[in-house]
Image 1: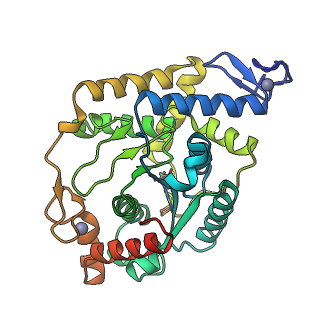
Image 2: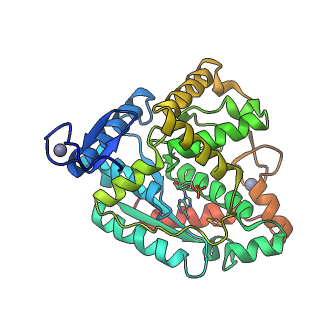
Length: 329
Ligand code: AMP
Ligand code: FES
Ligand code: ZN
Ligand code: ZN
């Protein structure tokens, strides 16, 4: 926002609230909101993220990014949003945190007039918190959390017959890309397409905010007065490689505005050119039927080991019941 005050909005000439260096443009609050909406609309069109009539499950954590995503998609889908869009919140039972997030997402659902499905870890696997599940698995909380969230998000979208949308931003995407590069994980690098195609047991996935920075999602959420939670998860590791990478890229961006977006576009067009769709034969879990790297998916393996029973089939059943009670099926 630095140096915005003295400038005028590029659209209406009112006093500017935001200055975007890479775009060399200043905006008032109203026109900043419109500018971001236009960008996301164009990104979605350019990469054909949603097809006419296709339905979408939007994973909303209650943080600034996914709250902004849900609000943007509701505007982009307009009158079709109540029919085509379903918000999903996963309550992981984190004390003093999950409840706040849930309240924010419930409020947002009311404000947008979009259905919300809330699923708790307790309902899904009979364990009260992700911390407890990780403790019993003798693994880091965030790593178990990642396995569970990825599994549940995909399961919901598959059962709903919908595309899955997540709130990953430009900064998230670049942090993962740099990490994949560091580990020389060519397979993952070649998968950086904005719409991951459907595969057996896997719903198509889209990341509509892939060209929007975290600073912009924060400003968007603030300027529209959207309900969201600022706090970070208490189990989140400090000083992760991702965070250090984000800081570094923001310093490069500061000195060379526009670097981040052109970096992303190069990776994406290369992934598209090398045919990301063909990478590896997709397999399905012999227990739950959803996508898997091996015979049994990581979620069924984890729950089998820790709880004595692979929980994939139970999760799918709970999700189907919820969708039916929401009138979605
Ligand atoms: P994270 O892995 O926490 O950075 O989250 C990445 C994306 O996953 C978010 O932008 C959301 O779309 C989704 N997500 C994360 N946590 C949750 C949650 N508890 N409920 C629903 N969606 C979530
Ligand atoms: Fe999952 Fe923190 S442990 S969000
Ligand atoms: Zn203006
Ligand atoms: Zn499975």
